[in-house]
Image (cartoon, rainbow, N blue to C red):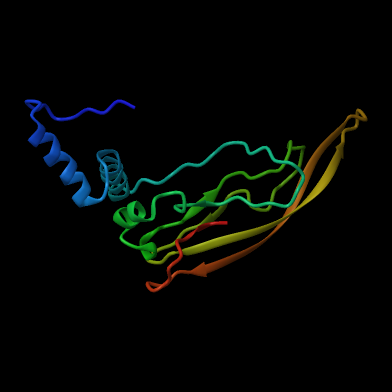
Length: 165
């Protein structure tokens, strides 16, 4: 990875001061830059757009969308505690397999907006293998699903971080 640094005269004392500064803050320059960028994005009202395809085997499992992947100290610097993490979300489309005419998945266009609070949204999904038969006798193997939803609010003394599970 390439790093850009302020120009220096190359003497040892300048380099040691820079290392000491990073050590005192506890973060390297990359982490500090990321913290500033995320804080600015949050101040501008920006959020995340998560999209993609997840290919899995037909076994029980789960996936999470959260800040858990961040270094806990970096997350603390960005959000100033779990109570300030806004996990508001809109699920535009969630499906498990190809779509067929007339299908409506239960989480499509689901909107959960939090104002002044935080917590964890949990979606328990039961997937049912389905075969859709066209008039042409062609069969489309796909899946339908049902969902049960829970929300657990976070309070200022919780040691967990919010997310979507």
